[in-house]
Length: 150
Picture 1: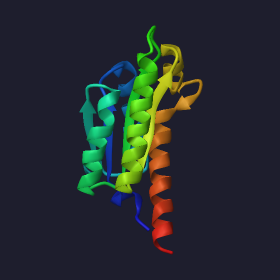
Picture 2: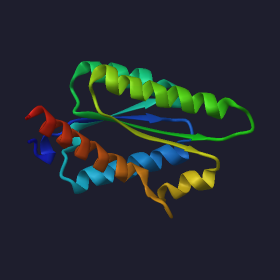
Picture 3: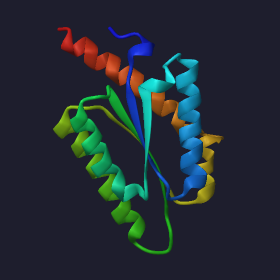
């Protein structure tokens, strides 16, 4: 079983709604420090929007350099059907990458109806998804290591 300082993570972050995604990343990076995961073991990749997350995630998974990839985005409902299409594309795309590439893709893309709901999930009244994503990544990688050891 790997120690925390041997984990290697890629983080893919959408610039769209960066007032939320930057907070997701900040929480994740702070949690990595708490867990003694060296800064050099974590690489961050910025993409324009949530729709671009799956292709960059797939390319990163194909490098086999990381134990898991964490994705952050914020899709906030507007006045058009665009919200549904974006949510479906990024969700399905990330799931496909995870299964096709046999790589944990930890889904930290917030899909909310309002900005307030998004803010609640980055340190507000419903916790911090950036922190939760790191904890999920570590637990998933350790679980997969246990499965591989069978």
